[in-house]
Image (cartoon, rainbow, N blue to C red; front, side, top):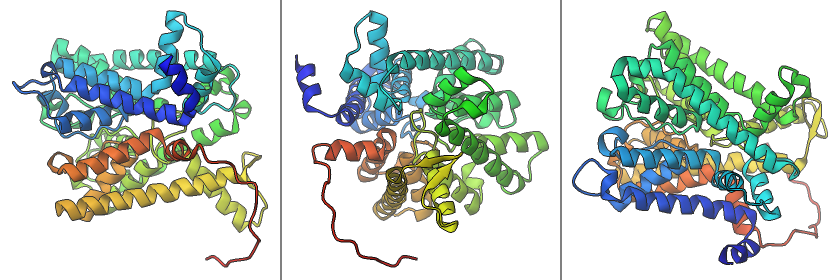
Length: 444
């Protein structure tokens, strides 16, 4: 009865926000249990809240090394939170309802539509069930492919490590449990020259970040690219560009001094992971300023809508690029793959980019002022949190409560989505029906 009452009073955007916040609070309570840590004392409220937020928001920023600080129970809680956050709270709830045989009502269907960014409500339950099955299959296949590498090095414990890293990679989370083997906060640097691990993890990250509707197009139409939705075409094209170009830049710059095989692995991995997985196989501190700036840009761009990835989304960048082309060519409308883009979408894209740049800069400035740390490192950390990436310059564990609070808010904003939060806050306001008098203003 209470749930029904709340559903009638709240918009779908508000329910989605509450779902993520509820998952974070539940995760915080579970991580506060003594069984969650390896030491004699329970985790502090600050450490538990930060870790739960990072897991649900599939970010990967940590204040405690996951393998060294959290016990198997704590690691299992983190993995479940990653799974729930990566697939979406509403999607997971719908999956449980489907398995238990419960009926999915109209409100729940509307929530699912917003969660997976579907264009229509019809068939959304069937689509969600299909997408969740694909997700679980991809994670299982990824774990099986990683087994030889982890079990070959670490024995039977490699089974858990393969499963953990497969889910973390597919959900674009970036959490790792390598600390007990290769040192605290070492991520996957031990596999910097491993082609098998590089290709498997990069594939999982990419598949998890291209969006649920793109999977549907690939499954339905196969290699018949012309039949894909315009959105899927944009996502696949932009994904290819944002992998190949950064990889080429890093290959000829930051990793030019490595042997060819390791150079290829490092370049490819560091091109894929900033959007928005958070693993790393190279030493980020040893990279050049231009290389780290490239990573910051990729972190803010992120993946596709309706995926496990965060960031402002590659479709946002594509729409703004197409808008620039339309301006240069003096077209009346923005076009992508022979289709016209609505003006409202262009305005939303411009708003999103402005918000992400402003929030990343503000977060970096606040942390730099509060912690007396270099602005560049703080901006890197801020962009990583906002893009739900998890790459770090190593300063997160030493941050004070104010800076950690800033990162928590940025992670939540980045995972739920800026427009979702704005719509949740402003959903009760009526639509504008009147217009002000028109007057010209010069720009540029």
